[in-house]
Image 1 (cartoon, rainbow, N blue to C red):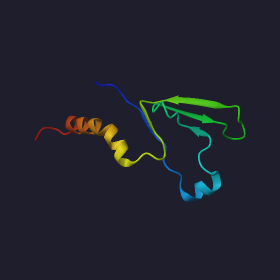
Image 2 (image 1 turned 180 degrees about the vertical axis):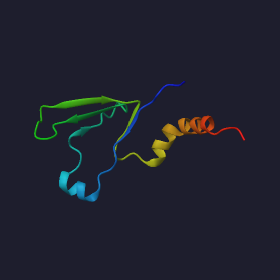
Image 3 (image 1 turned 90 degrees about the vertical axis):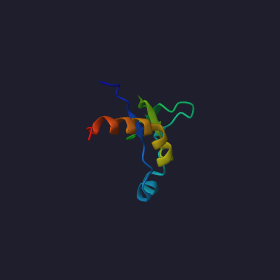
Length: 86
């Protein structure tokens, strides 16, 4: 039995989403905290704010390499555990 870790990756916007939404102004990624994400003012209710905490948050600009560097030990350990001995 191990601990469960929760990661959040916000994908980059698709071109049609970029045109329609003009970015992600409703999402805030605190630069000093790679574990938090806030959603502010969706659906015409600017006063609403939702704060989320994860083990790690990857903003839209995060590269595949950056994400893999963070999770590679988890992937390797998971693969070793789930592969039955030959």
